[in-house]
Length: 99
Image 1 (cartoon, helix red, strand yellow):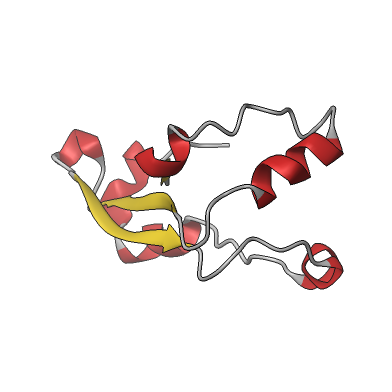
Image 2: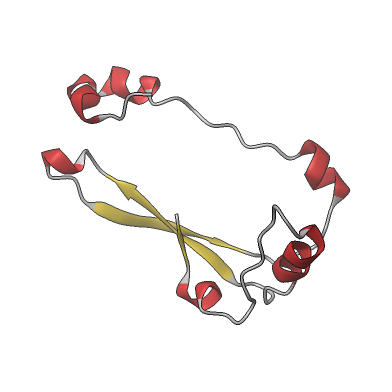
């Protein structure tokens, strides 16, 4: 994901969310309605095997940014391990970062 140029270049400042929570929230809620926040890219295969970065979508607001206790306490994103991908494409194993 890469910040979209319309938001990246906007004059919102650069607050540090770890040191000033209120400034960070003010910063986020100042983003204009319906803004495109991120351009989302994928790489079709490891770069070492000739992979290319491809734009696959955007992340865009629908309406305004609002603060939500429900979102703070109940909204979670599921992340998958790359192991499942490597089972499908074992030839990529040598190019995957090992942690």
